[in-house]
Length: 474
Image 1 (cartoon, rainbow, N blue to C red):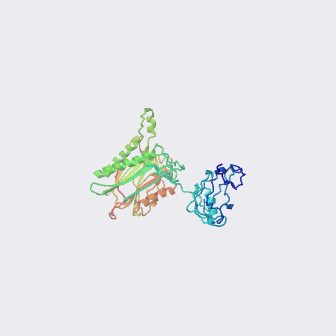
Image 2: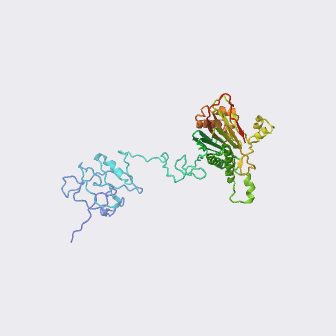
Image 3: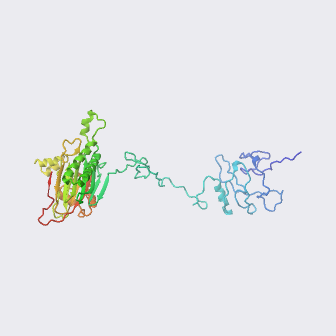
């Protein structure tokens, strides 16, 4: 009968190295399929060189399995052709491709290593899905970065979206909070500075208010004869009214635009200031319009309409023109501090009315708790708009201080304001404005603080000239 080709008997199970029972098709220790063991190659690389064919095979000492899986089955044992090394006689093994074998024992890709490093190479080859970083050396690998200490990768902001100032990755929602870390964002108007040639302004939220309800506008233009005209407008929102921050911003912008339109046409600066205040009032009134138009809400809407005060100054053609409604002020501080300073505006306030009527002196009136109640403002519920304007022709250089009560509450008299203005303010108006805002914050910062400085340069007229700006008010 024909000769049958039977599988040669195995001395050890390829899966667990335990000796199998003769005749078993599966290993009794690990369940390895013994019938799947391929025939040994003809060159038998694991045999000592010089052993004649047919002689008993010498066993090879393989490295022990490095770990077991969850079923306590030992990790697969690597074969001679998996990794270069030496046989049991110390001879270098050939790099013959591995013979096909069952999927459970599929070897990893060969990695070059010298004989002393073969053991380490075998240990790492049992986790082929974890690539070794190029920075690793020897038996040590670099640890992955700690996500708690790693810098967060900022996501690219979408067009027009604000990014959180704290985490630098979260988007800021319409309420001003980061959607990622919840950090409240500083509002754009919390602190604003602007310098434009010879005029500068600074506005700050202060230390007690949750938002800045002040606003300002500074600009410059040219008169028809080509001479320059410099403009500063400062507005203070009425906190007891609705949307005071919007009111002050609308008024400052409207007044500034009106002046930039009328002054180049040759309008007298004092008339231009009057028209600018009227334009500002109309802009604030427009904020009170109710889209629903419900008549039953009309009275309540007008009682709580947006409102603000306004004060402004124009330097043009050797004139200094000021205009105001409310209790924001303009001060004159001469460069030569030996000359007297002056306050160029009169408040629309309860205290000013008491003094004008002769019912109280200034000290008594401003000590009263009703002192700062304003009697004039811009807004839909202002019963009668009375813009005040005044024109002055200074005979000496000086500094024009345009400010809200957030500043003059801490330097009320002209002398106190002059003492707070730094001596170099006429050369560096922005620095001077910063110092004045700091003066108010150091005093307590109970209100929003806004100040604009305009240096007024003229040639001295001689000793017989008047000591300060002389002019007429309307």
